[in-house]
Length: 348
Length: 280
Image (cartoon, rainbow over all chains, first blue to last red):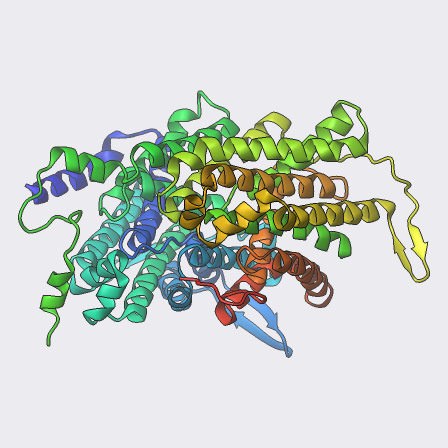
């Protein structure tokens, strides 16, 4: 039943470019899809380890810049008279490097999260994102600063024997984003249901108890941060190659807030939550555009965030799931995980 | 530099009070700062009233707006976890900042002052009268806050709530009232800082964002709920920014606050002046 629903949803999503001819709406769907991937990665940290990273856009932006610079090439002077010259590589290499570098940054932030928690972790992550933004703004030689990196090439898929397929049209990019989103979704689903996923949730629910049954806090949190950052980096890379121009505004705090709203409204700690929340809040501006000024839209955004926290504090998906779906044996993703389960599976 | 230090200290004290006593990460602090600056603009430029009258008006307006936010958004959420209140404050911040942008537009405004243009020259140092006034007003407000916290019964109740709100409540302290007053006082200090710095720089809807982060840096530097720490932290941040701008690059002036936050939390997470506080 569950599998059938999943296949139906995927088929429906895959059919969209076949009947939707409006390029503006397709464009909105592609950018929404990219942000949904970002929101899914944020959910891995926020929903499954309970760490609120409000600098998540940093990983997204780092992915975008790494990917863009890899495929554009650069020539910068470093202190000590050394010049660092890089010839352009294919965009697909940029995509992979973006995942790698963003994951590495996630590693350092993850290490930090072991030292500071709660409000302090939030402030550290915000500061991290702002420092990265200021570097992108001021290191003009590398990033062009506010002038932006332009003419970023579209992603080209190497096809063995045939040559290359450059993804220029909206339809091609739609499918690219859909495939990446599916891979990210499956990866996160797999992870959450693994031993590691149970360790994460055990930590979130009761850290002392989790530690006492042998869960390694640093390792678990750091690994979650690395994977989350790597997925966000992939999303950033897609963004750079689709929009084809990036400037330091990509690091704006409001973008993190958008992702947080997507996760919280959809339901943190549920796999489908960020997807539902992401689609709603990604497409809401499109729906509101004819009736509201942009400033009024943002007022509505803030108001909706507050309203959701007051009315549906657990998010749309968990609240609906609780109402309509009876819990089955085999524990769906939403059920709280008993710690004893983790402990029992731990080899003695 | 001294001018900035004084107003930074005001911002920091406001935030450290709210953070320390209520355990709320107040993202509306920057908006209150912007709000104070716009009150200054309305009173001086649009109503044509006295410049010196505008400061108390801004303080009062900040107090009222802070009390309103506390009563409508925070009081119903008493007992929820810190993440929920933080996200609600983020929502309030986005809504209010966009409201500012909607009402006054994105064009920067400036406020004319009646103070003499020619600077005051004291030997090798020359200071503008405006900056001197800002420093004096900030010092006065810091002193008033200090006396309020340490010499009045309201202040005693606030300190008791900071230490243990359950016990304070048992001793007959009206904790709800203390929370509302704390938030209102903190907000009025942020509004005062905005009203003071508005005429020095220009006024625009996003001016509060950096101010808020700087306030967080000061609070982390000085330690949670530590007023003296916030004052010293304010001056340290102002000094660090000048040094950063002078020795690294002026583009990185505003990065100093963030660098300080990260460095302090890595190496000394209890703040520079705190005795012992929990971080986790």
